[in-house]
Image (cartoon, rainbow, N blue to C red; front, side, top):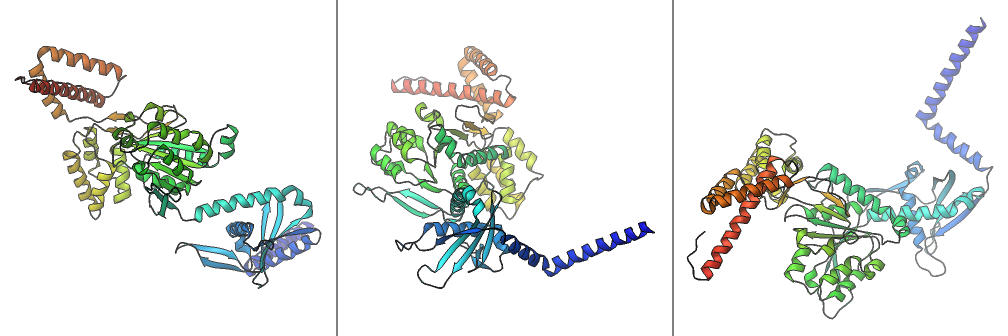
Length: 518
């Protein structure tokens, strides 16, 4: 009998608990209970208040701390628990921002302590709006200063994400030293999600940039300037410029596009560096063209000083420097040393993996019956740049099959034998490290190799044949077990070199009035 009563009592208690819980959550009583409980808890604590006015009473100017606190409070998820919250449109048309209503409270927690903010608005024109912080006196000494520093950090990050990015270009002026940069809104749509790049390399770059953003104290502890420099090299149209735009959008940094042809001398280059701002990406495109072609008054010494000179050490804080070139073999080794260039990233012509990424992005195709044929063409040494393949896909985007057929035709005509540029995976080299990817030289078609080989063998005789065999043996030995594609590359490279040498001999003979023939 006693056990039955106990079981009955237990069932009644459980049912009552369920009913109370349902009533609390379905009717909103739980929020009233929480509010009453918080009020009772506050009766046993002494709070101290700190007022943050919108206007500084002494200078009658805007109080920047008020703006930072406002940004911080509006970013808190607890703002949704306030009794009244304003919904307004942000800077973008599809952006909705939550803002605290006047005379409403919002709770925050930091290092285990409870803090309460009140948005006071008196309706006065001067000193009418204040944000009041209420903090328990027992927690004040422990958390006040760290909490205010935390507000500064979070507010800066929020402003950085929301602000409009700008693209700056330098203008030539022989008289005016100030205002050398002109800006326009930076609206480039490129992101790391849209660029055609191997997933592992993309992850490495994003990780490197994220580490840079958090490494200010680390760099300073090492006595180094908080900056990072990248060298992007590869043929035109392989995505270097889009990659720079993706970096800027990922970091939320402005872009300074530095045109060396509009720089009068080395001192002018330093002035332009002085006028850049923190949180920016400074880009010099086609660096080899300017230095080799002498199309700028800036010297190699000036470029080296720009990269890591004393002035750069003082004013290049919190900046990313990016240099692009079609081939880094054209650059002086002093430019490439670690410290001046931290990361090397190779942008080759497309291989089959890059083609599949482009097909997925442009056409929404992950697989297609024509993919094996495309892969075979790539393996035979044909290739195009990402820009060329992308344009063909855009032009035929309404018919994916037609788009792929157009790419196949272009690869068989324009892309056949385009192996002078590197074809393969992009590589990522940090400082003096080894590349993360494997690349193969582009190769000529087997048909072209046979023609060249037969032509030279007929003209050069047995001695040339012997030289060819020994040369191919040397290339094979240095290949360390290279695949057949690399052997075709070595044959092609040797044949072209031999043919160029004989053409030079022919030219010299003609210049001397002889009748020499190839």
